[in-house]
Length: 310
Image: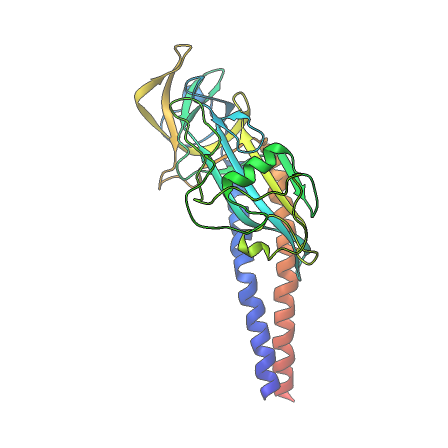
């Protein structure tokens, strides 16, 4: 009896454990259907409602650009992630995000037919990774990577501490530029030669940027959207009031933004075929994983039921 209860408990746990991935799979399938079912509308012919657009990302004014925190690229939007490598019983070694942030301003997308303002509030953005830096014990860090860790408050020597930040975030140009969010932590204590102090530090959960031998590698990923980059957009279009006049005298008549009536608000610098391929691959992996997980749960329950019938 006790054994049966334990087996049933394990089966229930497996089902509950897979529920989150099932929700994710359904979300991926929904996005895939939206991409396939929504035709591309020329920007100049957009009126009101949910639309799919393809065009170039451009600043509203040429001086309204941000500066990416690692590479210093003049951009419209940036994001970074600090990740550590850990072992997962499901997939083996995986990368786990331990800190991330992003910053962006409204910008314009254009095609041959016209222009539209993109309001980034509540947008989901999927960008190609522009830069990845792997960090291991004893590695000499590039100056821009050292500066980045100072800005975000990852302390190699003593971990995160409280107090006013000694270093300001990277300067942003233009009236729309805003400093990267400050964590309120002092700069990092680096060794004089710029080396990571070594593998004897406390865990990354405490905010360390180095690893011990048991913690695995650390990497920093930076993505940004440059002026002139091609973008793919799903969002809700509505009239821009007042119309935005660009530097070349073109008027942006509509704004693309989040809306409760819109099934999605999504921006990517990837092509439509690339997005569909990624969605199909991720869906396939999740589907096979869930088949195995739920199949094992069903097998355990079948064993319990057959045992009761004897």
